Every structure is written in C-alpha cells, then in structure tokens.
Image 1 (cartoon, rainbow, N blue to C red):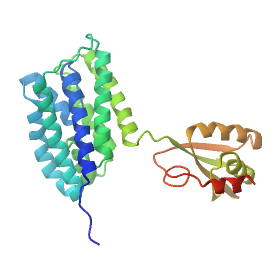
Image 2: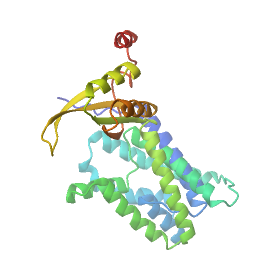
Image 3: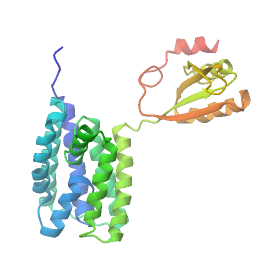
Image 4: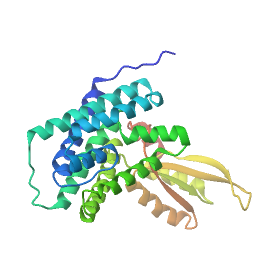
Length: 294
C-alpha cells in the first residue's frame, strides 16, 4: 500500500497561525516581563538574558541538530510539518521583535503570565492539533523514549524542570512562581484547543440490576449502552458491567437514577478524549429515538 505524504493546506495554515500566536506571546509577555519557559524556548530565553542572543536565531540553531538526529524517529509527513513549524516559529519571533509592540499590563506580572499562557497554549494547541510540532524538547523526548523506553511525558517534565532551574540564573524566585502559573495555564489551554473543547465522560457501572439501569439510560437519555462480561475476583461469579458514554451534564442525571435503582452500585467515571459515532459526531436518528420511547 502506498502511503499518502501529501500535506493539506489547512494543516499549513493552522500551524502558521499557531506558531504566530505562540511567538506573539513569547515576545510580548515572556521576554518583556522576564518570564521563563521550559524546553528549547526556555534555553533561548536564558541565552538572550545572559548574552543578548536573539531567540529567533538560537531557536533555529539549537533545533537543527535536534531534528537531524531525531529525523529517523518521525514519519515523513510528521518530519516535514515539524521542520515547517520550527522555521515558522523562528520567523515569527523575529517579526514580532522587529515590530517593537509594547503591551502595557500595568506592571502586573500575573496578568502577563496569564496572557503568556493563553497565547502560548492556543498557539501550541493549534500546532499539535494539525500534526506539527515546534521541534525542541518534543523531539528530544521522542529520542529518549526510543533509546531508554521512558515515556515522552516523563522526559518532557524532566527536561522542563532542568531548564526552569537553570532559568534562576537570570530571574528571581518571584518571577519563577509566575512562570509556573503561566505553564499551568498553557497546559490547560493546549488540551482545550488540541481536543476542540471536547468534554465527554465514560461510565462503568457494576450493579445487581444492569437491565433496569440500561433501560433507564436508553429511555431517559436516548444513549446506547454496552454490556461487558466480567467475573468478580473475590466471588468468582459472572457479572455484567455496563459501559456508557455521556456528556458531563448527563452524568449527574444517571447518578440520581442509580441512587434509586441500586444505591449499592459501583460506579467509575472516566474522562474520554474522543468519541466517534452516533450522538456525538453525528445526530441520533429521530426515528430511533421514537422507537426507544415506545
């Protein structure tokens, strides 16, 4: 089977927009207010503060060998989008530095931290959502995962901690704490943008009355439900575990019904990142709903 390496213009457009948003926040809030950053961006801020080196160039110079070494761990399409995202970020950092746009936040570093997290998170969220990266620590973490088996998330955390600790060479503890606030906001916004604001819950229900609960879900909410055959580890008895996917506001409705049907039911609520299917990515047929209610 021949693989399709074509890149959609939409991918390029959204990665361009994402890197522009990130660079805008990086220049106008991080650099202007002495807020640190993790990863390669944080290293460029250290070099800029200590020796006056332009982050637009140092970012590119640091990323070139990283991407070269990590190229074999990418698919061709991912590699091309990573190279594009890395170059676009450096270009936009240079552009926004030349614009000399000073945003007055009234010397309130907290506002600057929140805005840096907002712009940075929105930008990176778009880049990640459309298949790109901005190089740097993402590539390093992928190399470490391949070589040692450590998870990408763990490697990214260690790298970020190392860079943030090194950032204390040019910022004080007060600015570092505001940087932590910025990083938290950025991580939340990245998840929100990358997942499209998606909020769905999965619910596992173990009860002596699975049929009654399933009927309630079908008739009251119009949601489907699935029986999973299981066995109790202690009792060794066969049981039916009910699995259902719901919107967050529907979870409380089911909890209320379960409290009446079976107060002793065991319930586990799970965050679901994505659901594809009837009732979520396309509408439930009206005829089907009418049949359920009969």
